[in-house]
Amino acid sequence: MILSSAMPVPASKSSSDAFIEVRGLHKAIGSQKILCGVDLRVHKGETLVIIGPSGEGKTVLMKHVIGLMRPDQGEVIVEGLHVEKLRERELKPIREKVSMMFQNAALFDSMTVEENVAFPLVESGVRDRKEIERRVHEALEVVDLAEHGKKLPVNLSGGMRKRAGIARAIVGRSHCILYDEPTASLDPLVSDVIDQMILRLQKRYGVTSLVVTHDMKSMYTIANRVAMLKRGVIKFLGTPDELRNCPDEEVQDFINGRSGITA
Image 1 (cartoon, rainbow, N blue to C red):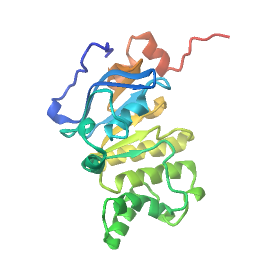
Image 2: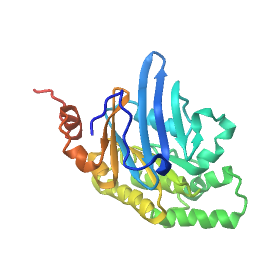
Image 3: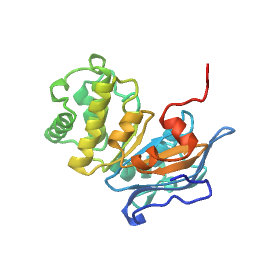
Image 4: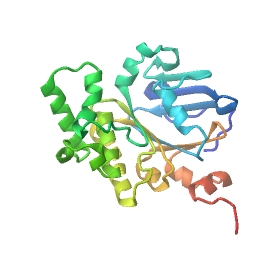
């Protein structure tokens, strides 16, 4: 479905089913307008994938959900809590519900994989060492890294570091995970492993996922719905099949990798 900046985003479910709601979100960085009135709803238990050209504000949008950036105008609501109204010290309930896997996994080089995964638990105040060990082991088992917990990040492949990042994101039993380019710079086989991890979390734990990606194969594998961000607004919102059959030339050029430049 093609959307204009003046149209509210439709939804097939009621607002009470939304885990995340973004309403009229505007954000400028310096003189550059990044988000120009984004409306988006992410339903509980779904995987919504955000696509669009580089520099269009996909990661900026995601950072607003967890309170890492503040809007110039608009609302960001996570399970009824208005993120934009909370001060930094009041964001703990949001960050207990929502975790983020950054593009480079953002692991601490001086910590082992186990220590990296345990870090959110320690920071949140968990002090029972046996409980920490149990939950870290469980998270590493989910991402098939249980045998690599004693290694340092430098000794892991790119795909393994991504999986360790996922383990750290889920160890706190977050209800929602934000993924920033989870398959970037990975070969097709390792990318599929990451996709299967995302699907496994959704199936096993009912996790809500918001995924930013340029990987069209990954998008078609994991997405329940897709939103295309262009010129600061949601240009398209619908299922992967609706995206594939969308008549808009700009949408088709993007998903099929056509630049329009000829030799």
